Image 1 (cartoon, rainbow, N blue to C red):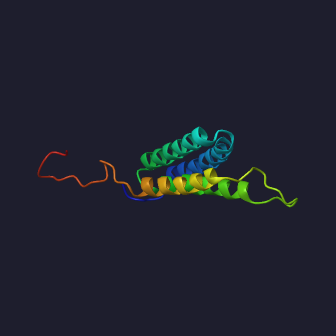
Image 2 (cartoon, one colour):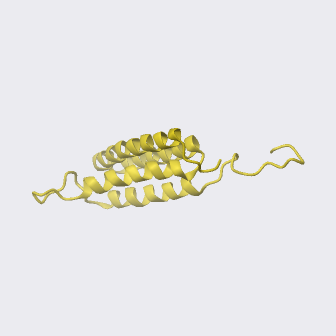
Image 3 (spheres, rainbow, N blue to C red):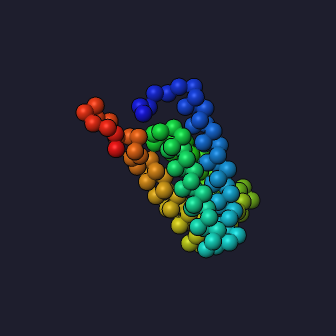
Amino acid sequence: MTGTLTAGRIAACLGLLIVGVLTGAAGWLVVDLWFPGGLLLALLALFGLFLGGRIALGTGLGVGGAAVGWFLSYVMLGVPRPEGDFLLSSSGIGMYVYLLGGTAFAVICATMRGPLDRPVSAAGPAK
């Protein structure tokens, strides 16, 4: 599937951006609440979001929209407020694992090739 931009693809990317923001905020909360299990749950949610974006649009563009939304929520929740404190706690190794794991999942899903991505030969049946 080639990367032609249509109104449907742009709407899907904006929808994935919004879902990415919501998933990132929910992941931030879950990682802080239940450390080992919450981190796994947040990373699985990110993997599902990125893989769903890849399948829905058929290109890495779907992963990009979701990853931008996730990263924006991660950055906005980690910026200190004018009072000097953070909106949410960002202490511990769990947040770093969440950032690096989410980045790794985004790269994996954006660069993977599915069964529909390979060329079909006219000489024989598709496998």
